[in-house]
Amino acid sequence: MKVICSWCRGEGQDGFVGEKVPFDDPRETHSICLTHETAVRARWEARRQKADDLSLPDGLMRSLVGCLSWLVLSMLQLGVESLKWLVSMGLC
Image (cartoon, rainbow, N blue to C red; front, side):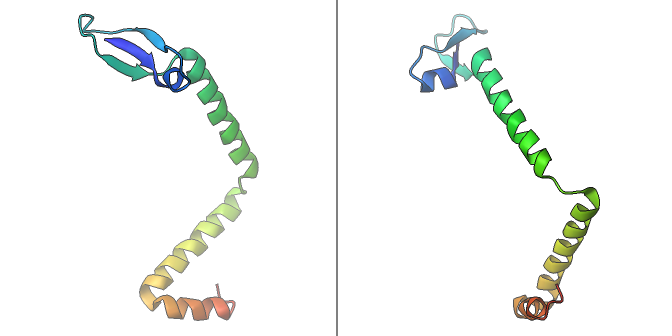
């Protein structure tokens, strides 16, 4: 089977990466070439670092998660109208 880089093919290039078993099978299978893999990993890393820069301190994050959990439980137990009242009163 011929291994073709989906990214290269999308850019109009041949995209041939190599072959894999069964070698006598003329069909194509898709993968990603080293060049595009490197580019994708670099974008992922840049996004991860950007997200890390925006992350909240652990204590604040736990407080927010706790508050959101409480809101969801309140919605389930009290109904949406009661939750709107709680919000309007500044209780959550």
